Length: 178
Image (tube, rainbow, N blue to C red; front, side, top):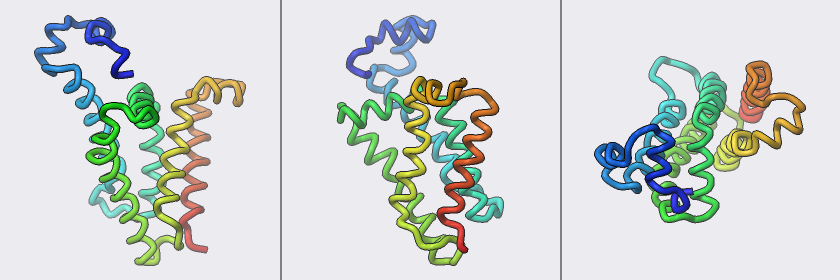
């Protein structure tokens, strides 16, 4: 975690000097928050639909694919955020208030608008988003468990393609009108 990692360890892992690290980020805190901010920006690009006329149901499907890919590409950052939230670390309030709440709020409003416009059947938007977030977060955090359960590499292209197909199908069915 944040407290247990020194700037020397960070610099060594990045293959740079501490001086270079501090030149770009000034403090360990700034580096930490920059990493989280960059992850959130990448997440925002997936959460907020592009203005290309994609219907809401397609956006749900695209979100599941993009969210899965993003978390797997940056699993260490997802673990860092989860640890900060679980431990109620020094920055957990900032992460919640400034980074995560706007994304959750967008998702809730997206679902409410889809329900109001007749694109989605009535669901509890908050519960839907919690389930969506938890399904991938837990998968990424517990990869060794999933390898044992599956009996194969949970990151293999075949397993991931199947997982994304199943997740997208399940979440689409949850909001799809009969």
